Image (spheres, rainbow, N blue to C red):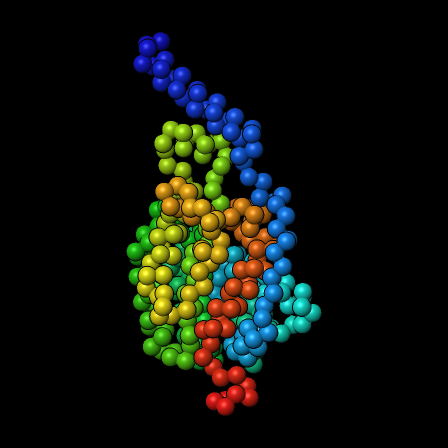
Length: 283
């Protein structure tokens, strides 16, 4: 074997050995083993009073389902069903205050989510809703996603809907994340200064979230789901990752995290609502 070839082979072998050693020393995350129950979340009565007096529409997929399960958890914990949570894909839209939700579009196709959101509101729901929000899934935004195209379609759709339904307050939702990939393959790629796909995916998700913040912060309400999910330390050149203690599979929220996320979501919705509460002077 030639010296250069031997040197390259030895370098690769050392990299593989180091990566496998790191895995053996516990760098691989067991996301299902973290007890995160110490964070007991409560929702102020003022928030419940506000969200229970309005009609909210939330378009989403699976992480949104986690958040809605968190809303139910919070209500069960307090022993009071203050807010009906209704899947309008399977049940007729009820009258009165409600948190109506719908699984829109197809995961991996952000444009289908945007179209589904528009079509649902324009199909009649928009005339009866006070607050509306569309949440993308982490699968919608990946390393090959044209973030500029998605953002342009989203902002144009929101602008059109705001014109058609001026009574609705739209809440903008940043993109959920995935955990840092610490398996042996990712370890080897980092040692060889190669890109890690999950890092590239999260970079694109963060790019869309940053565009949302730049466009809407200080002007329109934002539920910053990314900020809620992200570990305080942003690794990989400033790329955020989902906190491992918040998830059971690297992407979806576990029981304690979904309750905390739901409390944050309800707080944003409550602040977003401009409808007078029953019994108020403006009612």
